[in-house]
Amino acid sequence: MIDVIIIGAGPAGLTAAISCRKWNMDVLVIDEFTKPGGRLLGQLHQEPNGEWWNGILETKKLLEEASSISTDIRNGVSCYDIEQSEDGFTVYTNKGDFAAKKVLIATGAAEVAAPVAGWTLPGVMSIGAAQVMTNVHRVRVGQKGIVIGANVLSAAIARELQIAGVDLHSMMLPSKTKGNQNHSNPEKVIEGLARIAHLAPSVFLRFGSKFAKYKWAQKLALKFYPKSGLKMWGMPIYLRNAVVSINGRNEVESVTICKLKSNGEVIKNSHETINVDFVCIAGGLYPLAELAAVLGCPFKYAEELGGHVPVHNEQMQTPIEGLFVAGNITGIESSKVAMTQGEVAGLSIVKSILKDTETVNNELHRALDNVNNVRKNASIQFHPNIIEGRKSISEVFEKVNA
Amino acid sequence: MNNRIIDHPVLGKIDIGNTFTFKFDGKTYEANAGDTIASALLAQGIRQLRVHERSSTPRGVYCNIGHCMECRVTVNDESNIRACLTEVKPGMIVESGKSKPEPFIDRKNMPKTYMEFEAKLKSEGGGT
View 1: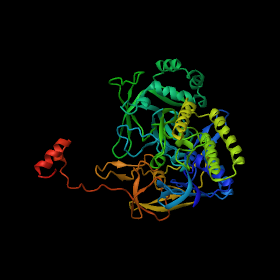
View 2: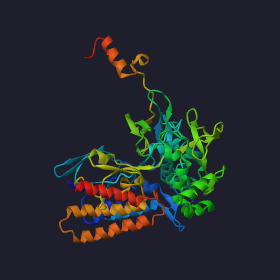
View 3: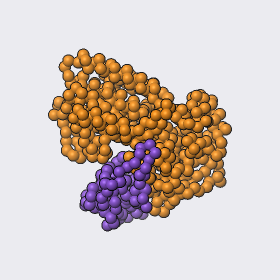
View 4: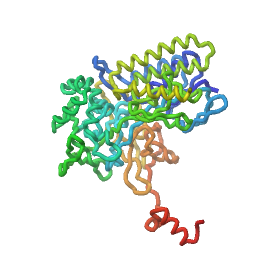
Protein backbone atom coordinates (compact mmCIF):
# COMPACT_ATOMS: atom_id res chain seq x y z
CA MET A 1 0.00 0.00 0.00
CA ILE A 2 1.26 3.46 -1.04
CA ASP A 3 1.43 6.16 1.66
CA VAL A 4 -0.18 8.81 -0.54
CA ILE A 5 -1.61 9.10 -4.03
CA ILE A 6 -1.62 12.62 -5.41
CA ILE A 7 -4.08 13.27 -8.22
CA GLY A 8 -2.83 16.08 -10.43
CA ALA A 9 0.78 16.88 -11.35
CA GLY A 10 0.31 20.63 -11.42
CA PRO A 11 2.00 23.21 -9.16
CA ALA A 12 0.09 22.06 -6.05
CA GLY A 13 0.44 18.31 -6.66
CA LEU A 14 4.14 18.44 -7.51
CA THR A 15 5.02 20.64 -4.55
CA ALA A 16 3.06 18.37 -2.23
CA ALA A 17 4.84 15.32 -3.66
CA ILE A 18 8.23 16.94 -3.04
CA SER A 19 7.29 17.75 0.57
CA CYS A 20 6.17 14.17 1.16
CA ARG A 21 9.27 12.68 -0.49
CA LYS A 22 11.52 14.83 1.71
CA TRP A 23 10.05 12.89 4.63
CA ASN A 24 10.56 9.67 2.73
CA MET A 25 6.86 8.97 2.22
CA ASP A 26 5.93 6.47 -0.47
CA VAL A 27 4.31 8.74 -3.08
CA LEU A 28 2.56 8.22 -6.42
CA VAL A 29 1.55 11.23 -8.54
CA ILE A 30 -0.90 10.64 -11.41
CA ASP A 31 -2.08 13.05 -14.11
CA GLU A 32 -4.27 12.78 -17.22
CA PHE A 33 -2.17 14.99 -19.47
CA THR A 34 0.81 13.79 -21.51
CA LYS A 35 3.30 15.90 -19.54
CA PRO A 36 3.54 16.90 -15.86
CA GLY A 37 3.07 20.56 -14.89
CA GLY A 38 -0.67 21.08 -15.23
CA ARG A 39 -1.75 24.59 -16.09
CA LEU A 40 1.58 25.92 -14.87
CA LEU A 41 3.08 24.74 -18.19
CA GLY A 42 1.21 27.28 -20.28
CA GLN A 43 1.76 30.31 -18.08
CA LEU A 44 3.82 33.22 -19.37
CA HIS A 45 3.55 36.76 -18.11
CA GLN A 46 5.69 39.68 -17.10
CA GLU A 47 5.66 40.54 -13.39
CA PRO A 48 5.36 44.19 -12.32
CA ASN A 49 9.16 44.17 -11.71
CA GLY A 50 9.71 43.26 -15.37
CA GLU A 51 10.76 39.64 -14.80
CA TRP A 52 9.08 36.90 -16.83
CA TRP A 53 7.07 34.19 -15.11
CA ASN A 54 7.79 31.27 -17.43
CA GLY A 55 5.62 28.26 -16.55
CA ILE A 56 7.78 25.82 -18.52
CA LEU A 57 10.90 26.79 -16.54
CA GLU A 58 9.00 26.75 -13.24
CA THR A 59 7.71 23.26 -14.05
CA LYS A 60 11.22 22.15 -14.94
CA LYS A 61 12.51 23.34 -11.56
CA LEU A 62 9.79 21.39 -9.74
CA LEU A 63 10.43 18.26 -11.82
CA GLU A 64 14.18 18.42 -11.24
CA GLU A 65 13.66 18.64 -7.50
CA ALA A 66 11.06 15.85 -7.61
CA SER A 67 13.29 13.51 -9.60
CA SER A 68 16.34 14.25 -7.41
CA ILE A 69 14.45 12.60 -4.55
CA SER A 70 12.97 9.82 -6.75
CA THR A 71 9.34 10.82 -7.04
CA ASP A 72 7.05 8.49 -8.99
CA ILE A 73 5.08 10.68 -11.45
CA ARG A 74 2.92 8.95 -14.07
CA ASN A 75 1.21 10.76 -16.94
CA GLY A 76 -1.65 9.65 -19.16
CA VAL A 77 -3.41 8.21 -16.09
CA SER A 78 -7.09 9.20 -15.70
CA CYS A 79 -8.70 8.69 -12.31
CA TYR A 80 -12.44 8.08 -12.56
CA ASP A 81 -13.41 7.01 -9.04
CA ILE A 82 -12.13 6.85 -5.47
CA GLU A 83 -13.56 4.74 -2.66
CA GLN A 84 -12.78 4.63 1.04
CA SER A 85 -11.45 1.27 2.21
CA GLU A 86 -10.77 -0.14 5.69
CA ASP A 87 -7.27 1.27 5.91
CA GLY A 88 -7.39 4.09 3.36
CA PHE A 89 -8.56 4.49 -0.20
CA THR A 90 -8.85 2.65 -3.51
CA VAL A 91 -8.13 4.89 -6.50
CA TYR A 92 -9.56 3.64 -9.82
CA THR A 93 -7.77 4.67 -13.03
CA ASN A 94 -7.55 3.70 -16.70
CA LYS A 95 -4.17 2.13 -15.82
CA GLY A 96 -5.47 -0.02 -12.98
CA ASP A 97 -6.47 0.39 -9.33
CA PHE A 98 -4.19 1.66 -6.58
CA ALA A 99 -4.46 1.40 -2.81
CA ALA A 100 -3.20 4.25 -0.61
CA LYS A 101 -3.36 5.33 3.01
CA LYS A 102 -3.98 8.99 2.08
CA VAL A 103 -5.24 10.81 -1.01
CA LEU A 104 -4.49 14.36 -2.08
CA ILE A 105 -6.79 15.75 -4.76
CA ALA A 106 -4.99 18.54 -6.62
CA THR A 107 -7.01 18.54 -9.83
CA GLY A 108 -6.96 22.32 -10.27
CA ALA A 109 -9.61 24.12 -12.22
CA ALA A 110 -11.56 23.90 -15.45
CA GLU A 111 -13.06 26.61 -17.62
CA VAL A 112 -16.72 27.50 -17.41
CA ALA A 113 -18.31 26.58 -20.74
CA ALA A 114 -19.95 29.77 -22.00
CA PRO A 115 -22.06 28.90 -25.04
CA VAL A 116 -22.34 31.33 -27.96
CA ALA A 117 -24.38 30.50 -31.08
CA GLY A 118 -22.08 28.59 -33.42
CA TRP A 119 -19.60 27.53 -30.73
CA THR A 120 -19.39 23.92 -31.90
CA LEU A 121 -17.59 24.91 -35.12
CA PRO A 122 -13.97 23.77 -35.43
CA GLY A 123 -11.80 26.80 -34.67
CA VAL A 124 -13.80 27.74 -31.56
CA MET A 125 -11.97 26.78 -28.38
CA SER A 126 -11.67 27.72 -24.74
CA ILE A 127 -9.04 30.37 -24.02
CA GLY A 128 -7.05 27.81 -22.03
CA ALA A 129 -7.00 25.47 -25.03
CA ALA A 130 -5.41 28.23 -27.08
CA GLN A 131 -2.87 28.84 -24.29
CA VAL A 132 -1.68 25.23 -24.23
CA MET A 133 -1.59 24.98 -28.04
CA THR A 134 0.49 28.17 -28.23
CA ASN A 135 2.95 27.85 -25.35
CA VAL A 136 3.18 24.10 -24.76
CA HIS A 137 2.62 22.50 -28.18
CA ARG A 138 3.86 25.61 -30.02
CA VAL A 139 1.05 25.59 -32.56
CA ARG A 140 -0.66 28.71 -33.93
CA VAL A 141 -4.40 28.22 -33.40
CA GLY A 142 -5.31 30.42 -36.39
CA GLN A 143 -4.42 33.48 -38.43
CA LYS A 144 -6.73 36.03 -36.85
CA GLY A 145 -9.02 35.56 -33.87
CA ILE A 146 -11.31 37.18 -31.38
CA VAL A 147 -11.62 36.56 -27.63
CA ILE A 148 -15.14 36.39 -26.19
CA GLY A 149 -15.14 37.25 -22.51
CA ALA A 150 -12.94 39.79 -20.77
CA ASN A 151 -11.59 38.58 -17.43
CA VAL A 152 -8.31 38.09 -15.59
CA LEU A 153 -7.53 34.82 -17.35
CA SER A 154 -8.50 35.89 -20.87
CA ALA A 155 -6.53 39.13 -20.66
CA ALA A 156 -3.42 37.26 -19.50
CA ILE A 157 -3.73 34.60 -22.23
CA ALA A 158 -4.61 37.11 -24.97
CA ARG A 159 -1.29 38.74 -24.13
CA GLU A 160 0.46 35.36 -24.44
CA LEU A 161 -1.06 34.80 -27.90
CA GLN A 162 0.14 38.25 -28.90
CA ILE A 163 3.70 37.55 -27.71
CA ALA A 164 3.71 34.37 -29.83
CA GLY A 165 2.74 36.43 -32.87
CA VAL A 166 -0.89 35.28 -33.08
CA ASP A 167 -3.08 38.09 -34.39
CA LEU A 168 -6.14 39.04 -32.32
CA HIS A 169 -8.84 41.39 -33.56
CA SER A 170 -9.99 42.26 -30.05
CA MET A 171 -11.50 41.10 -26.81
CA MET A 172 -15.27 41.43 -26.58
CA LEU A 173 -18.18 40.42 -24.37
CA PRO A 174 -20.63 37.62 -25.10
CA SER A 175 -24.16 38.80 -25.79
CA LYS A 176 -26.43 38.47 -22.79
CA THR A 177 -28.12 35.15 -22.13
CA LYS A 178 -29.76 33.70 -19.03
CA GLY A 179 -26.57 31.93 -18.05
CA ASN A 180 -23.89 34.58 -18.37
CA GLN A 181 -25.21 37.63 -16.51
CA ASN A 182 -21.84 38.59 -15.05
CA HIS A 183 -19.72 37.94 -18.14
CA SER A 184 -22.03 39.95 -20.38
CA ASN A 185 -22.50 42.89 -18.02
CA PRO A 186 -19.92 45.61 -18.76
CA GLU A 187 -20.04 46.87 -15.17
CA LYS A 188 -19.09 43.47 -13.73
CA VAL A 189 -16.41 42.97 -16.36
CA ILE A 190 -14.62 46.23 -15.71
CA GLU A 191 -14.64 45.39 -12.00
CA GLY A 192 -12.75 42.20 -12.85
CA LEU A 193 -10.28 43.79 -15.23
CA ALA A 194 -9.33 46.40 -12.66
CA ARG A 195 -7.60 43.63 -10.69
CA ILE A 196 -4.93 42.96 -13.29
CA ALA A 197 -4.60 46.51 -14.50
CA HIS A 198 -1.23 46.90 -12.74
CA LEU A 199 0.26 44.31 -15.10
CA ALA A 200 -0.71 46.23 -18.23
CA PRO A 201 1.67 48.91 -19.38
CA SER A 202 -1.11 51.04 -20.86
CA VAL A 203 -1.74 54.45 -19.43
CA PHE A 204 -5.46 54.07 -18.88
CA LEU A 205 -5.31 50.73 -17.23
CA ARG A 206 -2.41 51.62 -15.01
CA PHE A 207 -4.31 54.67 -13.94
CA GLY A 208 -7.22 52.31 -13.54
CA SER A 209 -5.41 49.97 -11.19
CA LYS A 210 -5.40 52.50 -8.37
CA PHE A 211 -8.56 54.21 -9.31
CA ALA A 212 -10.76 51.45 -10.59
CA LYS A 213 -10.85 49.75 -7.20
CA TYR A 214 -13.72 52.06 -6.40
CA LYS A 215 -17.17 51.16 -7.72
CA TRP A 216 -18.03 54.75 -8.62
CA ALA A 217 -14.87 55.06 -10.65
CA GLN A 218 -15.72 51.87 -12.53
CA LYS A 219 -19.17 53.21 -13.40
CA LEU A 220 -17.68 56.48 -14.54
CA ALA A 221 -15.06 54.71 -16.62
CA LEU A 222 -17.76 52.70 -18.32
CA LYS A 223 -19.92 55.73 -19.06
CA PHE A 224 -17.00 57.35 -20.83
CA TYR A 225 -15.69 54.10 -22.28
CA PRO A 226 -14.57 54.96 -25.81
CA LYS A 227 -16.58 53.36 -28.62
CA SER A 228 -13.33 52.34 -30.30
CA GLY A 229 -12.40 50.31 -27.21
CA LEU A 230 -9.51 50.73 -24.84
CA LYS A 231 -6.21 49.20 -25.64
CA MET A 232 -4.37 46.82 -23.35
CA TRP A 233 -0.99 45.83 -24.80
CA GLY A 234 -2.17 47.38 -28.07
CA MET A 235 -5.18 45.08 -28.29
CA PRO A 236 -8.63 46.69 -28.16
CA ILE A 237 -10.97 45.59 -25.38
CA TYR A 238 -14.54 46.42 -26.34
CA LEU A 239 -16.93 46.49 -23.42
CA ARG A 240 -19.68 48.16 -25.40
CA ASN A 241 -19.79 45.48 -28.10
CA ALA A 242 -20.80 41.84 -27.89
CA VAL A 243 -20.48 38.76 -30.06
CA VAL A 244 -23.91 37.50 -31.09
CA SER A 245 -22.91 34.48 -33.18
CA ILE A 246 -19.98 32.59 -34.65
CA ASN A 247 -20.42 31.79 -38.34
CA GLY A 248 -18.95 29.35 -40.83
CA ARG A 249 -19.73 26.22 -42.81
CA ASN A 250 -17.08 23.69 -41.81
CA GLU A 251 -15.01 25.94 -39.57
CA VAL A 252 -14.97 29.49 -38.20
CA GLU A 253 -15.19 32.14 -40.94
CA SER A 254 -16.58 35.18 -39.10
CA VAL A 255 -18.40 36.49 -36.05
CA THR A 256 -21.46 38.75 -35.90
CA ILE A 257 -21.20 41.50 -33.31
CA CYS A 258 -23.55 44.19 -32.00
CA LYS A 259 -23.27 47.35 -29.93
CA LEU A 260 -24.31 47.51 -26.26
CA LYS A 261 -25.71 50.12 -23.92
CA SER A 262 -23.70 50.52 -20.69
CA ASN A 263 -26.09 48.18 -18.86
CA GLY A 264 -25.45 45.44 -21.42
CA GLU A 265 -28.66 45.86 -23.44
CA VAL A 266 -28.25 45.35 -27.21
CA ILE A 267 -28.66 48.45 -29.40
CA LYS A 268 -31.03 47.54 -32.23
CA ASN A 269 -29.77 47.37 -35.83
CA SER A 270 -26.15 47.73 -34.71
CA HIS A 271 -25.00 44.35 -36.03
CA GLU A 272 -21.93 43.85 -38.21
CA THR A 273 -19.71 40.98 -39.36
CA ILE A 274 -15.98 40.60 -38.64
CA ASN A 275 -13.83 38.07 -40.47
CA VAL A 276 -11.82 35.82 -38.12
CA ASP A 277 -10.71 32.20 -38.42
CA PHE A 278 -10.62 31.35 -34.73
CA VAL A 279 -12.55 32.26 -31.60
CA CYS A 280 -11.51 31.83 -27.96
CA ILE A 281 -14.27 31.64 -25.38
CA ALA A 282 -13.33 32.74 -21.86
CA GLY A 283 -15.97 31.94 -19.28
CA GLY A 284 -13.63 32.02 -16.26
CA LEU A 285 -12.37 29.21 -14.05
CA TYR A 286 -14.11 26.98 -11.51
CA PRO A 287 -12.60 24.45 -9.06
CA LEU A 288 -12.48 20.98 -10.59
CA ALA A 289 -13.83 18.95 -7.72
CA GLU A 290 -15.82 15.91 -8.96
CA LEU A 291 -13.44 13.43 -7.34
CA ALA A 292 -14.00 14.97 -3.90
CA ALA A 293 -17.74 14.77 -4.59
CA VAL A 294 -17.72 11.05 -5.43
CA LEU A 295 -15.99 10.44 -2.09
CA GLY A 296 -18.85 12.23 -0.35
CA CYS A 297 -16.84 15.24 0.81
CA PRO A 298 -19.12 18.12 1.83
CA PHE A 299 -19.00 21.26 -0.35
CA LYS A 300 -19.66 24.95 0.10
CA TYR A 301 -20.38 27.49 -2.59
CA ALA A 302 -18.09 30.53 -2.44
CA GLU A 303 -18.35 33.02 -5.27
CA GLU A 304 -15.00 34.52 -4.19
CA LEU A 305 -13.30 31.17 -4.79
CA GLY A 306 -14.89 30.48 -8.17
CA GLY A 307 -17.67 28.04 -7.29
CA HIS A 308 -18.35 24.94 -5.20
CA VAL A 309 -15.33 24.08 -3.09
CA PRO A 310 -14.73 20.91 -1.01
CA VAL A 311 -14.85 21.86 2.66
CA HIS A 312 -11.33 21.98 4.13
CA ASN A 313 -9.29 23.69 6.83
CA GLU A 314 -6.10 25.73 6.60
CA GLN A 315 -4.03 22.55 6.84
CA MET A 316 -5.78 21.31 3.65
CA GLN A 317 -7.62 18.50 5.47
CA THR A 318 -11.18 17.67 4.47
CA PRO A 319 -13.79 16.26 6.86
CA ILE A 320 -13.08 12.84 5.28
CA GLU A 321 -10.29 11.19 7.27
CA GLY A 322 -7.17 10.90 5.11
CA LEU A 323 -8.47 13.05 2.22
CA PHE A 324 -6.59 16.27 1.49
CA VAL A 325 -7.00 18.99 -1.14
CA ALA A 326 -4.64 21.69 -2.49
CA GLY A 327 -4.40 24.19 -5.31
CA ASN A 328 -7.24 25.54 -7.39
CA ILE A 329 -9.69 22.85 -6.29
CA THR A 330 -9.79 24.89 -3.05
CA GLY A 331 -10.41 28.20 -4.87
CA ILE A 332 -9.16 30.00 -7.97
CA GLU A 333 -5.80 31.67 -7.27
CA SER A 334 -2.41 31.98 -8.94
CA SER A 335 -0.05 29.04 -9.35
CA LYS A 336 2.34 30.57 -6.81
CA VAL A 337 -0.34 30.24 -4.15
CA ALA A 338 -1.09 26.70 -5.35
CA MET A 339 2.55 25.74 -4.75
CA THR A 340 2.51 27.05 -1.19
CA GLN A 341 -0.73 25.16 -0.55
CA GLY A 342 0.88 22.04 -1.97
CA GLU A 343 3.63 22.29 0.62
CA VAL A 344 1.09 22.68 3.43
CA ALA A 345 -0.91 19.68 2.19
CA GLY A 346 2.25 17.58 1.84
CA LEU A 347 3.37 18.37 5.39
CA SER A 348 -0.14 17.75 6.76
CA ILE A 349 -0.06 14.32 5.16
CA VAL A 350 3.39 13.62 6.64
CA LYS A 351 2.10 14.72 10.03
CA SER A 352 -0.89 12.39 9.76
CA ILE A 353 1.36 9.39 9.01
CA LEU A 354 4.38 9.94 11.29
CA LYS A 355 4.23 9.47 15.05
CA ASP A 356 6.84 11.99 16.20
CA THR A 357 5.53 15.20 14.72
CA GLU A 358 7.34 18.06 16.44
CA THR A 359 9.67 18.91 13.55
CA VAL A 360 6.89 18.45 11.01
CA ASN A 361 4.71 20.77 13.05
CA ASN A 362 7.33 23.50 12.97
CA GLU A 363 7.67 23.16 9.22
CA LEU A 364 3.94 23.16 8.78
CA HIS A 365 3.65 26.46 10.65
CA ARG A 366 6.28 28.02 8.44
CA ALA A 367 4.50 26.69 5.32
CA LEU A 368 1.19 28.12 6.52
CA ASP A 369 2.75 31.56 6.99
CA ASN A 370 4.19 31.27 3.51
CA VAL A 371 0.72 30.74 1.98
CA ASN A 372 -0.52 33.97 3.51
CA ASN A 373 2.56 35.95 2.45
CA VAL A 374 2.46 34.72 -1.15
CA ARG A 375 -1.29 35.33 -1.32
CA LYS A 376 -0.87 38.92 -0.13
CA ASN A 377 1.83 39.63 -2.73
CA ALA A 378 0.29 37.76 -5.68
CA SER A 379 0.50 39.82 -8.85
CA ILE A 380 -2.50 38.09 -10.42
CA GLN A 381 -5.56 38.13 -8.21
CA PHE A 382 -8.64 36.39 -9.48
CA HIS A 383 -11.01 37.80 -6.88
CA PRO A 384 -10.67 40.73 -4.43
CA ASN A 385 -12.32 38.86 -1.55
CA ILE A 386 -10.35 35.63 -1.62
CA ILE A 387 -9.43 35.87 2.07
CA GLU A 388 -13.09 36.25 3.12
CA GLY A 389 -14.04 33.33 0.87
CA ARG A 390 -11.39 31.12 2.45
CA LYS A 391 -12.50 32.09 5.93
CA SER A 392 -16.07 31.03 5.12
CA ILE A 393 -14.84 27.57 4.05
CA SER A 394 -12.73 27.11 7.23
CA GLU A 395 -15.77 28.02 9.33
CA VAL A 396 -17.82 25.29 7.68
CA PHE A 397 -14.98 22.82 8.34
CA GLU A 398 -15.03 23.69 12.06
CA LYS A 399 -18.81 23.20 12.16
CA VAL A 400 -18.72 19.89 10.29
CA ASN A 401 -15.92 18.56 12.52
CA ALA A 402 -17.45 19.84 15.79
CA MET B 1 -0.07 24.83 -44.07
CA ASN B 2 2.40 24.94 -41.22
CA ASN B 3 1.15 26.56 -38.02
CA ARG B 4 4.18 25.66 -35.92
CA ILE B 5 5.59 28.47 -33.75
CA ILE B 6 9.27 27.62 -34.12
CA ASP B 7 10.75 30.81 -32.73
CA HIS B 8 9.24 32.47 -29.66
CA PRO B 9 10.56 35.78 -28.30
CA VAL B 10 10.49 34.60 -24.67
CA LEU B 11 10.29 30.80 -24.78
CA GLY B 12 12.99 30.48 -27.44
CA LYS B 13 13.36 28.00 -30.30
CA ILE B 14 11.87 24.52 -30.37
CA ASP B 15 13.62 21.44 -31.65
CA ILE B 16 12.03 20.46 -34.97
CA GLY B 17 14.55 17.76 -35.80
CA ASN B 18 12.66 14.98 -34.05
CA THR B 19 9.68 14.34 -36.37
CA PHE B 20 7.84 11.23 -37.52
CA THR B 21 4.65 10.42 -39.42
CA PHE B 22 1.22 9.05 -38.57
CA LYS B 23 -2.07 8.63 -40.47
CA PHE B 24 -5.34 10.52 -40.13
CA ASP B 25 -8.23 9.33 -42.32
CA GLY B 26 -5.76 7.59 -44.62
CA LYS B 27 -3.50 10.60 -45.23
CA THR B 28 0.02 10.90 -43.87
CA TYR B 29 0.84 13.74 -41.47
CA GLU B 30 3.96 14.82 -39.64
CA ALA B 31 4.26 15.13 -35.86
CA ASN B 32 6.88 16.52 -33.49
CA ALA B 33 7.99 14.44 -30.54
CA GLY B 34 5.67 15.32 -27.65
CA ASP B 35 2.71 16.33 -29.85
CA THR B 36 -0.80 15.21 -29.02
CA ILE B 37 -2.94 13.99 -31.93
CA ALA B 38 -4.81 17.30 -31.74
CA SER B 39 -1.71 19.53 -31.76
CA ALA B 40 0.00 17.62 -34.59
CA LEU B 41 -3.10 17.93 -36.79
CA LEU B 42 -3.71 21.57 -35.91
CA ALA B 43 -0.09 22.37 -36.79
CA GLN B 44 -0.94 21.17 -40.30
CA GLY B 45 -4.18 23.10 -40.55
CA ILE B 46 -6.54 20.21 -39.67
CA ARG B 47 -9.18 21.39 -37.22
CA GLN B 48 -12.12 19.12 -37.93
CA LEU B 49 -11.65 15.87 -35.99
CA ARG B 50 -15.13 14.37 -36.32
CA VAL B 51 -18.71 15.02 -37.24
CA HIS B 52 -21.54 14.80 -34.77
CA GLU B 53 -22.92 11.25 -34.69
CA ARG B 54 -26.48 12.33 -35.45
CA SER B 55 -26.42 15.82 -37.03
CA SER B 56 -23.16 15.36 -39.02
CA THR B 57 -22.05 18.89 -38.05
CA PRO B 58 -18.26 19.35 -37.87
CA ARG B 59 -16.41 19.31 -34.51
CA GLY B 60 -12.87 20.02 -33.32
CA VAL B 61 -10.90 20.57 -30.11
CA TYR B 62 -12.77 22.74 -27.61
CA CYS B 63 -11.36 22.46 -24.08
CA ASN B 64 -8.01 20.74 -24.77
CA ILE B 65 -7.99 19.21 -21.26
CA GLY B 66 -10.03 16.07 -21.91
CA HIS B 67 -13.32 17.23 -20.43
CA CYS B 68 -15.59 18.22 -23.31
CA MET B 69 -14.99 15.01 -25.31
CA GLU B 70 -15.46 16.99 -28.54
CA CYS B 71 -12.15 15.73 -29.98
CA ARG B 72 -12.94 12.02 -29.71
CA VAL B 73 -11.37 9.97 -32.52
CA THR B 74 -10.56 6.32 -33.24
CA VAL B 75 -6.93 5.35 -32.59
CA ASN B 76 -5.60 2.01 -33.85
CA ASP B 77 -9.19 0.69 -33.93
CA GLU B 78 -10.01 1.87 -30.41
CA SER B 79 -12.91 4.36 -30.47
CA ASN B 80 -13.65 7.41 -28.27
CA ILE B 81 -10.02 8.38 -27.67
CA ARG B 82 -9.46 12.03 -26.75
CA ALA B 83 -7.14 13.59 -29.35
CA CYS B 84 -6.15 16.36 -26.93
CA LEU B 85 -4.81 13.98 -24.25
CA THR B 86 -3.24 11.33 -26.45
CA GLU B 87 0.40 11.57 -27.42
CA VAL B 88 0.82 10.78 -31.09
CA LYS B 89 3.19 7.86 -31.81
CA PRO B 90 5.03 6.89 -35.03
CA GLY B 91 2.79 4.91 -37.37
CA MET B 92 -0.39 5.58 -35.38
CA ILE B 93 -3.60 5.13 -37.38
CA VAL B 94 -6.15 7.79 -36.45
CA GLU B 95 -9.67 7.93 -37.88
CA SER B 96 -12.09 10.85 -37.51
CA GLY B 97 -15.47 10.31 -35.83
CA LYS B 98 -18.26 9.59 -38.33
CA SER B 99 -22.01 10.09 -38.25
CA LYS B 100 -24.09 7.06 -37.27
CA PRO B 101 -27.27 5.72 -38.85
CA GLU B 102 -30.49 6.92 -37.24
CA PRO B 103 -32.18 4.22 -35.17
CA PHE B 104 -35.76 3.32 -36.17
CA ILE B 105 -37.58 5.77 -33.95
CA ASP B 106 -40.73 7.58 -35.01
CA ARG B 107 -39.69 10.99 -33.66
CA LYS B 108 -42.77 12.79 -35.04
CA ASN B 109 -45.21 10.75 -32.99
CA MET B 110 -43.18 10.61 -29.77
CA PRO B 111 -45.12 11.74 -26.67
CA LYS B 112 -44.21 15.33 -25.67
CA THR B 113 -45.58 15.19 -22.10
CA TYR B 114 -46.01 12.53 -19.44
CA MET B 115 -49.79 12.65 -19.95
CA GLU B 116 -49.33 11.95 -23.66
CA PHE B 117 -46.97 9.12 -22.73
CA GLU B 118 -49.55 7.52 -20.42
CA ALA B 119 -52.32 7.95 -23.02
CA LYS B 120 -50.10 6.25 -25.60
CA LEU B 121 -49.36 3.38 -23.22
CA LYS B 122 -53.10 2.89 -22.59
CA SER B 123 -53.98 2.95 -26.26
CA GLU B 124 -51.29 0.36 -26.87
CA GLY B 125 -52.76 -1.77 -24.09
CA GLY B 126 -49.68 -1.51 -21.83
CA GLY B 127 -49.01 0.29 -18.55
CA THR B 128 -50.48 -0.30 -15.11
